Amino acid sequence: MFSLFSQKNLLGVEKQIHRLCQLIKSDQATTSDARLDVRHRRCVPVVILPWTARRPAVDLLISCSTYDLADQGISLISPRKLKDSTILIGFWGGDGSLEEPWFFRAEVKSVEPIEAGFWRYGTHVHEFMNQQHRELVVPLFQDTKERLNSDEATVLSPG
Image 1 (spheres, helix red, strand yellow):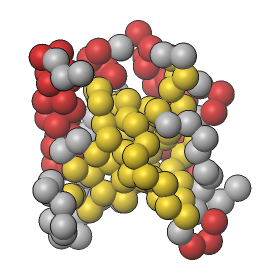
Image 2 (tube, one colour):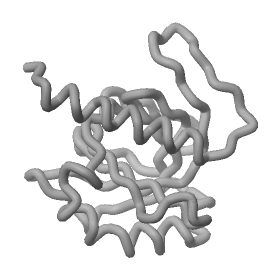
Image 3 (cartoon, helix red, strand yellow):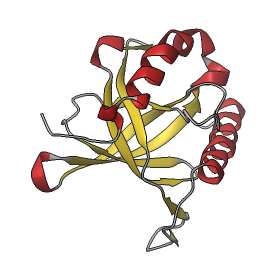
Image 4 (cartoon, helix red, strand yellow):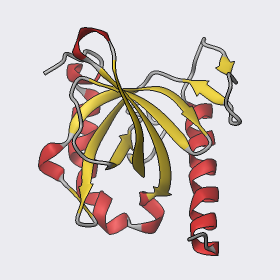
């Protein structure tokens, strides 16, 4: 069911994703293949964790990488196959570009195995969690900062 509340959430999501695209420097071109939306090729480390029972499953937080970003979607490359259909995606600019980690709630729409044991996920982003559910993501800030500032954030290995 479509509501004004969900439309407001999507507009907030688009604004935040556009802001991320501006903050993340890229030499790669913006693409617009057979899709209606413009995809911004940005490869940055992120954390993901399952969203279960309307709460983040903190103990299952893993590092992965974005492949590209669009108005309402984020494509991810992960070293693990996810079992959950709803996830949180966490961004952190340790260079001072973000004051705090940003979290988005997204639904996994497509899963594709790719070479070397990695998986590509297409997601549809529903909410910018820092605004709608801040109390649930603030406890994730420290782990996210530590994970995305470590060597693990840049070197992914399947497993």
